[in-house]
Image (tube, rainbow, N blue to C red; front, side, top):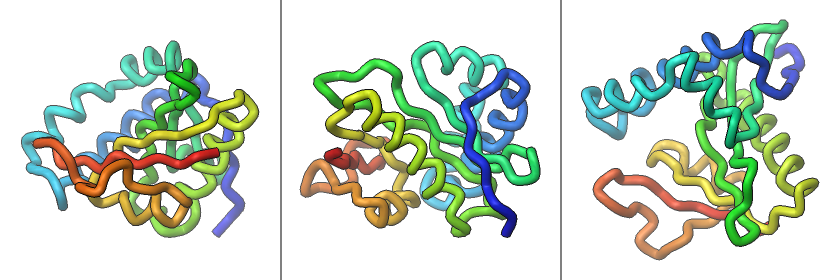
Length: 157
């Protein structure tokens, strides 16, 4: 696979990032969550909403040959030294090829440079193993919590 380039979000990527997130919600996350629920969530990820996220998130985009194939974001403002990692998605056809790990490497570098001491990620069930491989641990013994069936995971930096 060609080299993947990670760069900060630019407005011109809003449509592509929206499509990456929506495709994952509807094609991947429906393995663990009802389709109707994912369709409702997907409505929150329009190109306009993606642009608004950049006000309080640092958003990154993974590019292959200049085309967006993945995205990840981290909150700009820490809470008690921790930042939240959000919307980590890679086009289904590129999953398992190191794109997500590259995005998370950029997220972690941003966090360390900013003096963050801990990363927290509210992960969907299907991504828990991915985060474990990157050094994240479950925040409780229950692992899956709440009626939303998410894994709260953290990594100390």
